[in-house]
Length: 113
Length: 117
Image (tube, rainbow over the protein chains, first blue to last red):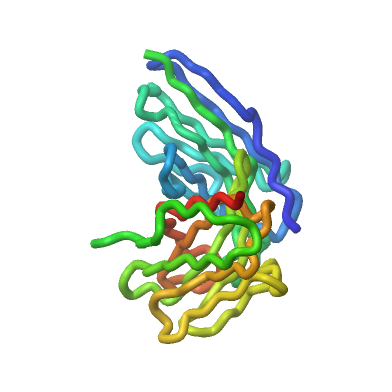
């Protein structure tokens, strides 16, 4: 199946600093890259997504960049807040219309006040 | 608008016992997914439904797992008999069929945490 590598597995930052999480994928047919935030005891919640016809997308403090040539995409969170603390998952499809998503192993982000 | 509803939230059973999970997707969402999330990992797809039809069940261990979505709305995932390795969180997700090209947003429920003793 599609391998999605996600780094780092844990990330600790001070409140107000930026956080960056990176993912790489292997299948060049992939055309959809969502990011999910999962808080303890809850299901994953979509925070931002990007399609392959776009190189960057921003929503307030959150941005995602996509480099199709290098097959990697990154999540950027600026001005981090303690409530940003959670596990973040990247995912990609294989360009399939079936809607199957392949997830990374997750990044535990901790924002210290 | 209500989100994806799952029940129960927690289930503890002994190995070899049966267990069932229920999911009610967001109203109007044609597509329903069941994922399994092992501890410390991302979700992995088990089965995907388009209305009442299972269109992707290649990852469902069919010897012990079964699923149904009889009227194209809510769905049930069953394990019989459960094994120790089935301990995980079982997530249900749904999506509207807007683009229909595999890029429709998937909305997840809170999951059912299964512990097999």
